[in-house]
Image (spheres, helix red, strand yellow):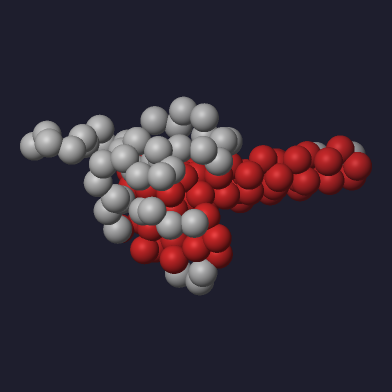
Length: 110
């Protein structure tokens, strides 16, 4: 789990996507608190912007891989409420054009 989490290639399962959402929702406010507690304003802004870019890249990459698992283009992640669909919907079985099935299912296996 979380192999190449900043890469936009591959597919991930619902579980990894759920962990991604939890990390994003809990780490983001924590980093905001840390940034606000830094007394030097320029360092605080640099830290805040760097953390925002890193977390956003992480979230977008993981969401794109979840879209790939469902056989969709990554632009679907920008549809409002689609992230909830990605959280509960099963991915395409077997390999698709975006990569191998993260569950390891192959045609002809049960």
